[in-house]
Length: 479
Image (cartoon, rainbow, N blue to C red; front, side):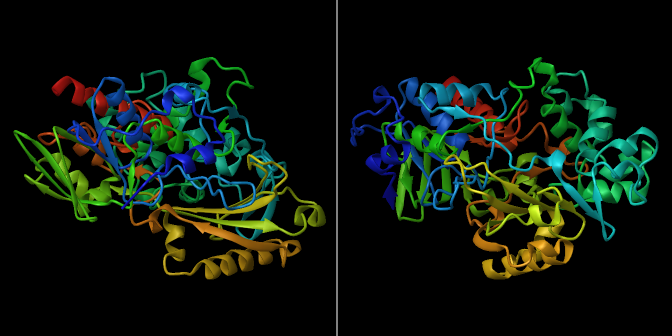
């Protein structure tokens, strides 16, 4: 077991935390009111709110770092984000927390924005300009103008019954009829099997036929920023200057009790008198309440006493997270200057997206990231990092010969490889929203659950903040 060292945290933050938030170490003899299991954004946000209300809080974390899926690769040139890459201007809670912790926000540039991608489909290289007339284009009418990497988002949101409804509508009985396989919904809109197959390449779940149409409608409904009446400049995504990991580090450093790292929980006992969280470090923490901020599949690893029952127990066993893998590489020479094609590429070849980016907070670092999501990510499950790199570069050399020999491996990152993770984010299979959507926030005695998967209104990092706020309020209302 170790603590998040306050000096190390402040060094990483470059002195960016307000001095008023750096408090003396806790009085060890004071009883704990709440134990928070998990130091992702949701757990840390809950802990900060509870402390502001005068409660004594202890956060325990199984990893050797804070942040959960928010993870800046600090040791990689350019400090790319391996999870929680950007925040929207609509992320009110997250932006407010950055302001309070004096963390500057910046708008990172793309070296090769998606509008400048080349497409490799059905064995052909196709430019964005040629896509509307390409024989590989399976769409009809005006839909032929929609670029393939945004076809799913554009068509689903354009025709979605959730449009113009509030962001909680997806959980109401009115929309349960759309909790069906995504291909069934798309066929009802006249899409061909070839078009559905193409749209499935970008799916972040396991595969398109195992994805709820209502899940995808809700995903793009939340991401529709036109409701906020933002200008083009205001709608650009943001990052924390120096890397998004600086936010959970600053949140943890603001707490009175240091976050206990390398302290995985394995059992939770609860009765009328309180809760006890048992950790693998042979420590137990007694408190009035426990807040559990862990991915749904990881809850299967916790022994609950009393046993969790009802729909939430079923959800723990059945809900999964989407798979993804990122292969980060440096570029010796810009191969796109040799073949005179756009820097980025979107393909049906098994490597999905290959994006040259210059998004590191330090600037001046040109890296290439291969993003592979969904079922294709399973290909990499039993590969070493070197094998992942060799596969990606071999495929890339076939698609764009100018790239041969131009890459060097930096690192491979995959949320599902993390023993405390489960994938990139929760996805709903057909029928699961009807069965479990309104039970994800069920508490069990003195145990309250949070995490992005429990959010109702928002998704992503702001969804994590929303869920942490709700969990803290649940405890405050009950304590």
